[in-house]
Length: 573
Image 1 (cartoon, one colour):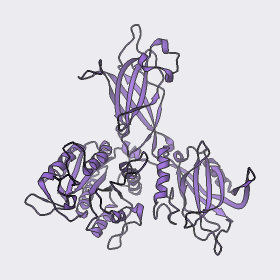
Image 2 (cartoon, rainbow, N blue to C red):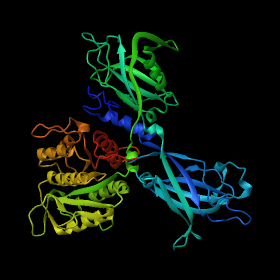
Image 3 (cartoon, rainbow, N blue to C red):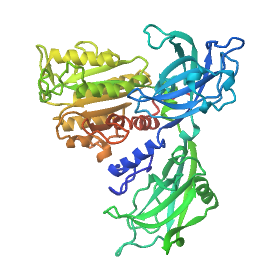
Image 4 (cartoon, rainbow, N blue to C red):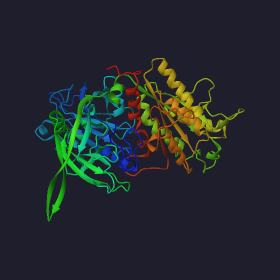
């Protein structure tokens, strides 16, 4: 949003110009790990027709929620209160969870009948083995938030003997309802200005920028926003900055606003700072007052704040409610997944183990299969029909010329397959029915995807399309690909590119505006927005965020950049 979290150490541009480099990625990953990015969802729960386990009265149900890791392990997330004498309880306890679009967030719910002798014990202290199990249900958070009502009804299942096979018994239903917290939607816009900044440069004025940080419980500042650098200016007025209430916690949460003099070495000089909440900054704006900057000095073992003549002014402060990604989903918008697979000869003979297309008899997935699964398993929840266009490129179908966009299912008439498994089946079949060839051309598949997006838009569809291109090499048709991408930037379309194998993919980064300027056609037309994310398959990042999560994380913002700049699709809620 605007200049928020724009990178300064790597250059002088604001968030809308040259984009962030590795330093900003670290900030983003830190914020994500603290739940500061992504919408906060409040989950509420009710049940109907629960099993009656009590003899003289009805059950006294409690619900326990777990998050399920990729390895299948369960981590308890919450326990509700006990509702006495009810087979149709509505629990008051709510559970707040951060919705992460780029991850499959599996939730497991278990209902228990709490015996009368334990009614005076805190629910957190209850031993579950001493209670009577009523049933279990599970879902993915995406299944809840994509429902128009944001309510999902699940069957509670019970198996008399967990060690025995066979169908479990249905024993009631659990209703999960999600509401997006208002802080996820509330956006503050500020225009900040400083006066009489200290001169740090020998032969010129300072090159100032602002860093806005949230102060967390332990007192450490966590960066949430940076302005652009204004060259040679000791009374700078920066472009508007945008902060969501969720980013900072609340309007009363303390913020540290630091003014630095930019140095290309990355060692920026602190010119002064102010500690204010959004509410206090709003008051400065209302009163037309400035706040003096200060510097902390150390005298012996004591820290003192030296007040400076430099001042911070808030020339604009406005608060508004923005339509969010989840608002559009609730309004009926969907994401349609598409995939294009590289079948050029540089992948190697698929029958040999060193081939990138090798189908391992042990069932171990190759890089193409794993990418399809990892990306597809996230995106499939956002398409109600789950019929996905799938193409191949760079191969020679049987008795035909080299094709740079052929239907993966072998059909001459339609390109869609059923579900992620349909893509996997079509991919395997294609390996036995085409000859790997070349060169590597992206233009035809991008144009095909753009045509589908354009036709959907013309027919009043409420779909946003996501094309996944998996390739082992650098494109040959660089300018043709750029021309196709620029043309597609006006459409409801994003393109994810994953580079597999050991090739040098540095040239591919030109497609991703995060790494450079906006794309420009051979005729001089500039892309209206950034629609490409590129990442090498081997570039597995450290920490909890996988390479595929990093690839998908920007999709909601690309979706919103299209929706907010176009009146073609409205959330209708």
